[in-house]
Image (cartoon, rainbow, N blue to C red):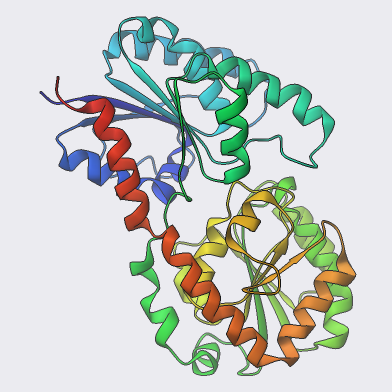
Length: 376
């Protein structure tokens, strides 16, 4: 008998970017897949049967979330789902509250955390609020899946879900990046309108406060003095984009910065990238860095639980202290002048990242899904 699954996440874009391989796998098993998201893109999610558009706003300070809860509860109560898999913090919290009655009837509730909002060294307020909420909601969860070791240890030892698993990321789709690995970087730079000797830093991230784009722009004010040909390419959209463009204009950075907007052709830009960077204040893992590492690109990123899953400092990349501009610029300059060091980092990164491939992640999730959707 076909199993019926509901997947809940913030937006259709989130599902399009991260989850299509998993949907394809579930469809091959004969599952029916409904999704509940807020439509922020084109509203098309391949391999799914029905999309429900709910007002999952990013802020907790909106009455629209009450409407989202009511709609989701009605959907769950009437949907007769065998399994509900939720992602992203706000929709996952609403889902686990709304699924209370369904769980009593046998529906399995699964939650993948893409990075808890509390973490070692994080603000005390985050621990007081987010830790408390996650611990409370864990008692309403059958399965928690984490994507880094630090989160796994907290969830396993302190939370109340029936089962907890650690998955090494949500999977890098390596098939997209073959040309990025093999092509001549200098020739590609010229073909894309850059100078052959441009030194390109690439940061793929939504323009939200957590991603800390302002740090990179502030660092660039000094960095361009020692590496005049440096260029920072920002790929992403978001509410802080205009603010970052204004800062760049005020500080005469536009010769050294390009704002690419939301891109579906990240592979094209990785093919011309010299260093992939992240200034994020906290990450569950860091998929953009993982993709760059597969393409044999050295990485420089903040010291963070997610980044530490990928990067061993001074072995396959550099990790710099949060908000330390001098340290960030020093590491960038070291890789600029020492191309052998950059190559050694890149080679080691490509070797390490193989364990984070989509194939391994699919095998992992296949085992978990099979446990809960197998025919009785």
